[in-house]
Length: 101
Image 1: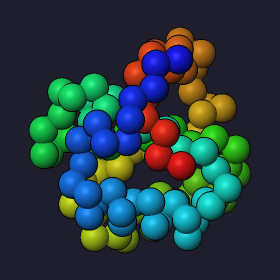
Image 2: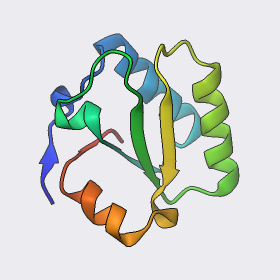
Image 3: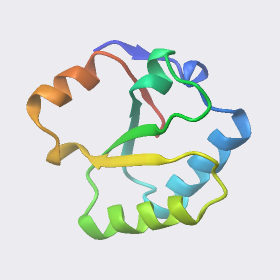
């Protein structure tokens, strides 16, 4: 599984800090991976951030989504539970991701 370094994520440092704080407040024990254009280096400022979260309940995921929507992050964050993704999509993500938590 190729895994990129956190410094390669296309996200301003203060936005990354905000994001990590939200994870600690809402899903402190969950594993979170970023994937997609902000990982691959093909993003631009208006692109969303794609996340896969592991071992979270539906309620935790809902709280996380609300917290992200209510935050001051200037980007859309698209969050998916790992166990709900199709196997083919999981394999694609495993080719290029960044561990956020």
